Image (cartoon, rainbow, N blue to C red; front, side, top):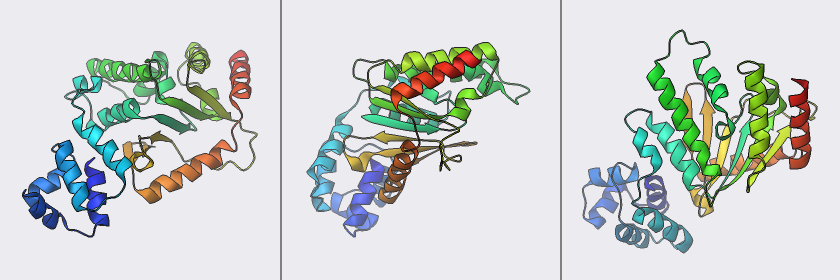
Length: 270
């Protein structure tokens, strides 16, 4: 919300100091609003939107709905135990209207089974505090529940064959992981598509991302995976770029039924 307020102000050609003076708050308070350190009431949000001459009523309504939501998400239980970006990821998944994820070398987080997680998080680590590891795994398992709730977001996972064939853990872990993907693909709103090694023209090896759809296109978010963490992108040019990227990748992916048969074949080969 803070980022959208900042973009709205910048489109109006106003400085943060000017907006703060008009609203009757200090420049520091205005800054805190725009970086999300303090909340903004729906009334104050509509006042700012009116002053910024924002004519996009759908965007203003969506932001106002966000401002009036006061329910604590389940992820808040982990605030003192995990990094804020992990909590932001869970919140993004929970509030998204839809998600499309692309993974080339890993199974998407929302589709991972517990043994796969343990093998992933303990690889190349001589020590790993057992209590923290259990917290991380418990958190990731709870994230999966978004796909099983009464009103799940539509979820499309585009997975490269490399991630399906890579044995993260032992053979039993690999088999269990593939079976779980197949079972989850039968849930309402879940689609799994595979990009095979044989796909010509595929050059998306360096991408690992999730595109989350918001209540209006301006509130879409792209989450990018890195070795050392994750980033969230929401600038209009960035959203356009990753929408186009996903369309390109999807043109290389097999259909849902063909993908399920393909995963079955890989599982049999194990």
